[in-house]
Image (cartoon, rainbow, N blue to C red; front, side, top):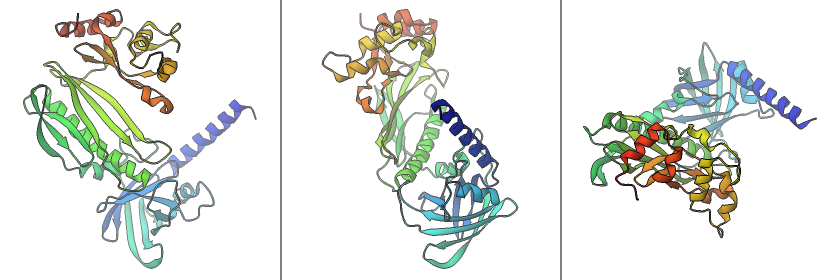
Length: 371
């Protein structure tokens, strides 16, 4: 079969399977009781299933007892009859089941029982559908994770940056910066910090589900890197964290806050043409003028540096301001991820690329910019 035709056939099968799964009556998030425990379950459109109880908060996956077909769980959802093993441990690794679920869908509620895998008396199970979250995708939605987000306990401690006082808001997995009450933009930033901490708690839970153990704390941070009367730049960092699969998860992104407005700003608005100003080839001759400037200033673009050969393939995120100029975060493929350093273009050299908003920003920092 022609490669493109093969891709088209496979894609068609995937779309058909997704539509069929979406139509299955059991797909979605469910909450209820297993004996005396409160539990949440999720059946996604791909035929995956998982659960946790609101006591131990330990994620467990559910697989069809009759696994002769890859679509066994989807078929059971479509029939309204499920016979599932409950397994604790890393995804994609064999592990003995700890329990067995036998469920029937009756008037939009799952009814049945749970037994230990070794047998014994069963515990009654009743599950009722949770309202589907807005903008829900094919996987477990926000309704499934809501108790995890709501259970977060936030600790507050005093801190300072560049002589300005603020608070750190922290959980077991993350630490966020929050301005003091009354500071410019404080209400919006505090709400954003709380939402971020709850999102990080959900990510930590998902990570534990992937690797099958509690493991180390996530160690995520949302910390200031620039703070002026007008602007606050926050670094959103996730250290290298194993969540299952072939590679670890890590990321560094930035938020730029306009404090008087209490809102974030897209750094591409400071560049003429926005992100499209990067469009061009991967080599020095065919790259766009902005991309050429970024290649010239990249700290790893040195003759004796292995990264020099791949500099043209960097991905560039929206810039954020520093007193010296615009700072552009860069990333590379996993194999060359060490090349992903940030690139500073001084204000004077950035001038040809600046929009009206960018030129106004440069004027704000002109007194601190080097001459």
